[in-house]
Amino acid sequence: MQITRSDAPFVLESGVLLPFVEVEYEIYGDLRVGHDNVILITHALSGDAHVAGWDSQTKSNGRVWRQDKPGWWDAAVGPGKAIDTDRFCVVCANVLGSCYGSTGPSSINPETGQPWGLRFPAVTVGDWVEMEKALLLRLGVCQLYAVCGGSLGGQQALEWALRYPDWVGKCIILASGPKLPAQGLGFNMVARHAIMHDKDFADGDYYQGKPPTRGLEAARMLGHITYLSGKGMDRKFGRNRLAKPGSETQFGTEFEVESYLRYQSKSFVERFDANSYLYITRAMDRYDAADAWGKGDLIETCRRIKAEMLVVSFSSDWLYPPDECRDFVDAMLKAQMPVTYVEVESSSGHDAFLVDTIPVGRLLRAFLLAPSRKRKTAKTVTGGQV
Image 1 (cartoon, rainbow, N blue to C red):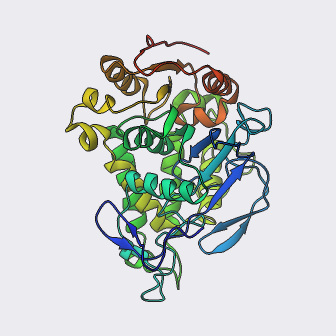
Image 2 (image 1 turned 120 degrees about the vertical axis):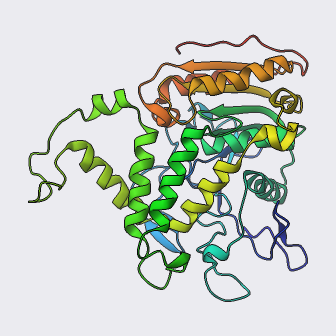
């Protein structure tokens, strides 16, 4: 859906005007009379609008890419599932700057007729929320029963609760928080370095030639390591060797974990744009809710929130470790905000919100179906196993 008009460009937080913005989105379930059953699901770094169900085609990098797998959160979203589309109307939109249908650096700049490349303006988490709001208004929606997201999507969910507190009834933040810790900043920097120092990067203008495949592969392999955990990788791969090594040289693919990372990286570069990886990780790095809304004071920032909050951390998460999530929850409690916190014991690492579907599903269902509490009550933080 196009969310701009000739007389109404999209205004970024930087002040830059985008004359044309298209948003790829999907809707699941029926919009109830009164439009009071909408749940906005926000995706993570490499996610897209196809959150659930089976679809043989996905738009990527200006072409249709075929896939034979369900949506990225199909285990949680659908009829009778934790986010029940027989009860709720679910909306998921691809973020600005991505390559899965929404306008981004691989899109055509209408002023030049060429791909934007690195001339595409910087985007922020706030820009994504504004884009999602513009989409919802065009769909006739002006309130959200809930907003829910994990990782980068959790940043968006929190920004919704802060930027438009009167819109959001419930807010679910999974494996995320008000800022990315320094270790995550470091991982993202190394990933961008690998992409931008690929010999085929061409300062981002690679669309008419060979893309920076090796750099993006390295970035994805690094990313996958951070999404897992040491214990999880030991359990899944150990030091198991391949029956048939992938090369005659001593530096070929020898261990199962190497084969897994190579496979994941090669399939990823077929469908994702390197420039989009740069833009999205930088937006993730720059998000700091306390700086944006409370002049560095997280407690003051939390006073803006009116939504009931559910924050879920995972014991083996490297990127948003439980300590970071607990600090956020403590700030909300000190601000007298309604909040429920659960730390899930898991060896799945950062990806636990996607793969540990049974405990996560129980939390989602219980929180979404619980009667709403009054604005000024605060629930004591809870933690432990589910």
